[in-house]
Image (cartoon, rainbow, N blue to C red):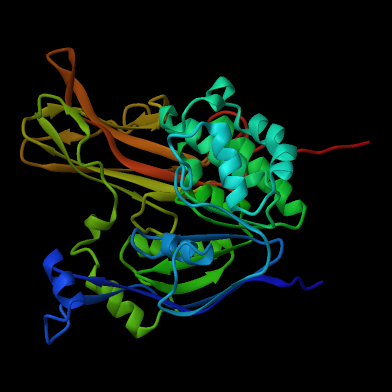
Length: 422
């Protein structure tokens, strides 16, 4: 059964004027210059798509691709330069942390303020109030001025309000990233309830695991262009290509040209590296390069759960070393070590640590960690005169995102096969 479209975007374009200095804007506004002083910047360029009732659609893209601008136009916060947006249904938006809140008012007063702005009567808000308060779960802080709230309390109240006013369309822009894991689980459970009830969800997120798990369809933006739309797996794969400076198949010559203007000068620039890792050791050996490669051999910070991937590290020796040990470790963002290994554990001990030479180690394995964000660390250690010695360590050297459609309890998936007889 075909469902009706509730969001229709046709040839949407948003142009901003950029000026080299503020006085140029004033001169042009007053007509004091014969020639335009500003330069047109296309935040969005001829974007078209349709979203049907009951769909959960994600929007992904690199920074500056126009994601947030698109959502603001759909929700009426911004107006388009050209094109048309049609919305059929009551829409509730969570675009920015605490957007629409008066920080001098209490949380409770803001519930009534925002509810009234969305078109609800006081009686209707009274009927929803207990449900909103229970979902936000911020206790007595509900009677305190919002300016005293932590970012976590802000997002709890804002999301509780947005999702409990019975919207037909829910629009979310990265607002869940500040919530704790339990609150995020509660929000996504609400998402699933919304989907089952035939409601529509549109959200922007850098959490690709959530995009892969919850979205029916994904739209890929880049430099203001819509490059593609389709299944989460297909579009996330194309997004990974963008992250290493490659345009996906189907991109037009004009889109490739616009992307090339901001393309990194080298492949290394597109692989995300911590600019300030924790580094120590006597530097008799030094880690000079490291990379992560997916199952297709692409250098990337994003690995799909259940696939084979490789970790590569290069070490340059400045002194003669006897059987140095090369290692890597994964930690979660809270700092807990999840797993790791080294050349000694794996039996690869025949490493000649001669001064002036370089050694490369490639660790290949299956990714079975749960979906989420991790930090990868590297080390080169060994023994000097019988004493264990750290030659070089790089903690939190680079991030790794694990994409998963299915997560289980804890850090690892047991990959269980279940057979039930009755």
